[in-house]
Length: 50
Image (tube, rainbow, N blue to C red; front, side, top):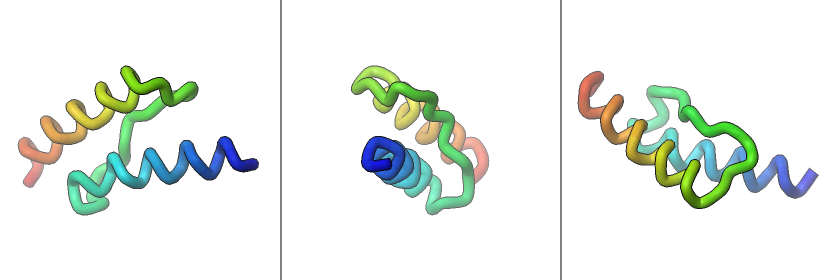
């Protein structure tokens, strides 16, 4: 259960880049590289939408 909680917290943190308006594209396992990719993707998508 703890691993799911951590993954959800990271996903929510990535989503907060867009103010929570867009869902984060973060697959498991949430390796540092995947988290960075999700952050970069969210920043790009948030810039397009907002």
